[in-house]
Structure formats: C-alpha cells, structure tokens
Image 1 (cartoon, rainbow, N blue to C red):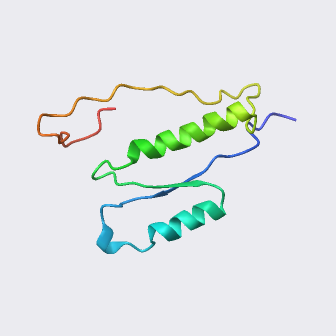
Image 2 (cartoon, helix red, strand yellow):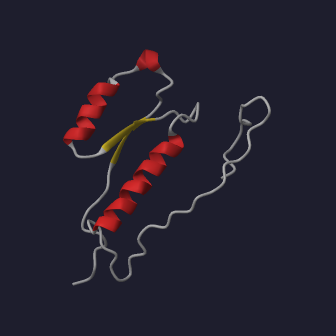
Length: 105
C-alpha cells in the first residue's frame, strides 16, 4: 500500500476581515468556543490592516512543528514534511505605513 503522508491533519480556524466590526456575524467568543470544541486554535485576521496575518501562518507552522516533534505526525518516504523559512521583516516607511500595491513576498 502506498504511503498517504501524515496520519493527522493540523487545523487552524481563521476569522477574516476583523477590520469590519460593524458587519460581524460571529463573535470572537463564539469562534473561540467552536475552535476549542474542534481541538484547534483560533486567530482573527485582517488582510486590509495586516493584523495577525503573520500570526496565523506562524501559529499553524508552529503547531505542525510541535506535532512532528511529539510524533503525532511522522515523516514518511516520499513526503517532504514541513520546512520553516524565517524571513527578515521588510523595513516600514517612515510614516509607518506600508506601500500599497501587490505583495512583493
């Protein structure tokens, strides 16, 4: 039988558009309770304001790394696993605002 990769998936519940408080449909408490009941973390993000976007990715990557270290996820033949690459943060403009336009990642 061929290998199917890891036997456990790692999930993160992400609430998006947290900058639009006036149109909120789900409270943060309700989302946190749902995430806890499903055994996962919860992060609210806003791509518009760049709030917690990096935190969401870091939280998920750290959970995967921890699962690997604890043996919850095992690396198998032909499965590359996870590679964490830490990049230096780009300096902000003197005004503290980032330049508009497409992402230059």
